[in-house]
Amino acid sequence: MRVSAPAELPPFRRRWAAVGGLLVLSPISAEYLIGYGESTSRPMELLAGLLVLAPLYGTVAVLIREVTRRTGRGWPTILLLSAAFGVIQAGLIDQSLFGREADADDPGWATQAPVTLVPGLGVDAANLVNYVGGHVIWSFAAPVAVVESCVPRVANRPWLGPVGIGVMAVLWALGAALIHSDTGADSTAGPAQLTGAAVVAIALIAAAFTVRRARSRSPVKAPSWWLVAGATGVTWCAGQMLPATWSGVTVNVVAMAVLGWLLLRWSRRRGWDRRHVLAAAGSALVVRAGLSFLVEPLGDDADFTVKYAVNAAMLAGVAGLLLVAAHRLRRQEPNAC
Image: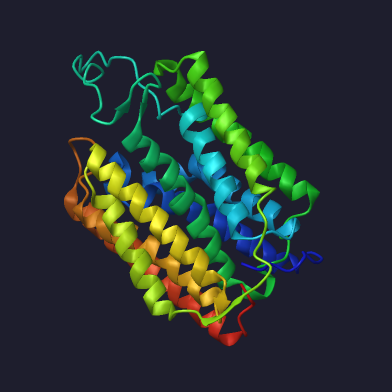
């Protein structure tokens, strides 16, 4: 995607509305749309949870987007930074990539080795794809694309000044420290595993600022944005429903790689614009919200009547947000991407 050099800050109301939207959409997309949490049938707890999840997820989405646009870079940088923070989140903060100590209430839980455990690394390959890939798509990239589509006039411009960036960084550090203190105590991750995760994250960050944009466009016309939405939607859905086995992980990785290659080629064609980006990102949110009706939440006291009502409200909210974004893109001539 071609991105113009950042300009001066937009009007306060417009940019802070965008920042606020991204702060909220990122954690909702990451944690709430799929409907697996114990609080899914307790709407007030969902709202209260945003006080922790917005600093943990939303601030990162804002910072990734801000750094990318301020340096005049595009989606390769956003995706690589998203992968880096996915590794930081799952490998260093909550350490969900690694094993957990035995649960006193369920002694057999920690002794059951995952089917896709990578020998010598102590990493479950299915969790690696699910957690890190999930952060890339649902925690950061898709929310950034959707919110930018809602504000196309300022999508390539910075939204925060130095103070705002500092506030986001401090909020993220506080949220990360809170989650780490809650989940890190029972992690079995050793120094070598944590060091490895840190090295991978640093390498991804370095790659994000060395990757180069395409300098030329193909004269071939870009596909319809409907085709983009269909191709991405099918891939997102398949990836979420594949079993946590080596064959399932392999198919998922291959499918995502093929989709990434297609999107890269399509984005270099004539006529590719923000509608195509919104189609890819929007399909991810729709799939996530739609599959929530098939997901049984954690815990034994879920009220499924309330759960389905929450799922329906989330899906309706996603649909409404995408309609607003599409309408605003139609009102303004799309920027070149």
